[in-house]
Image 1: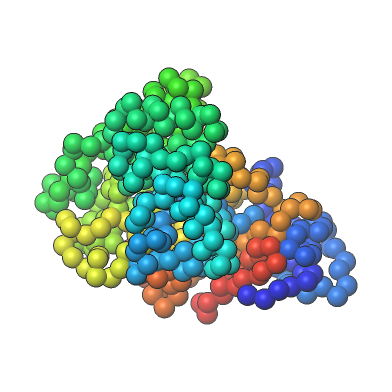
Image 2 (image 1 turned 120 degrees about the vertical axis):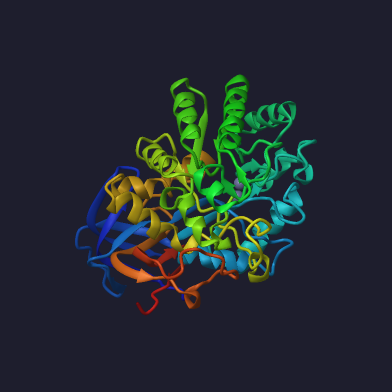
Length: 430
Ligand SMILES: [Zn+2]
Ligand SMILES: [Zn+2]
């Protein structure tokens, strides 16, 4: 990273997700801000970067990831995770609080922010726990965590099982205008490494039914309606949850939702490889669910795309399927998978796709609206949509390498970007 003074991004196609437009424009960056945007700008003395044939978009926001610090620094740190995030085009990330110890106090929120600032890669907007130690019993220090910079609360990794506790979390967060992010998974069902269905039966894998997710989502949607609070449903994976959210939005419930690239890219058929990298929670579902998730993104029922980036060390994943930890790293492949499955497949326009990773999470979390207008912070990514590339282990920025997508041909690529005074480039030899 170096410090540019004035930089002219010349001739790129500028994606404006707020106005759902793409235009060929120059962008002049000065002192970490966007100084001018327009046709054929003159900027004598500026560093000129030829962006013809490339796209320029606001930096992406990942509203759901795991950076593992504090506690599991052998899998990821805030520094390695935020660098991997930049490589995927995410200039802002929201780490979930299921670290060790969990982020349930003002001091721990401040710790995360300080580590992120020191690292100087993607900006971090912490998510605090709903309950102390994520134990689901007593409320965490929600007010002081918000004061310190937390943008939402969640006990991600677990569902807040006790309805009275969840009601109090929602009521409390309403007073602070914070969204409550629910990891919807009923307790009591056997923990499924796979979706309960034909594939799990054939392979003999421990399976959990999709109703575990949808029934949990139904309770939380009704509690959000009852308390008039803001609920956000994490990692929507099945058709029934999409229908419930659509129903709730039509009723005026303040509910938003996210899904992850793997739920619109893969199905449980991938488990036939017995590769533990395909194990994720919630599990990969059927093709009917995958289509429903895509339809939910297309009609706005699902607001945002998040990665649920979940690093695990090699030794943790190299065990039997039933005991391997769930989740895989997601920053560095997210944009390409969505571009392939949603834009090239003609389900979403490019501007609408970009909005799912920029304006939508910003609106949910109350962050400044991502845009490329004069006066805005220089916070943007440069994309090569014509790129065809294969992701290999030697390209990984994350400290962990648990991904099912090595060797897969990917479409469209983040090649670099700007964040304040810094420019970053991740052009790997193709
Ligand atoms: Zn979760
Ligand atoms: Zn998660």
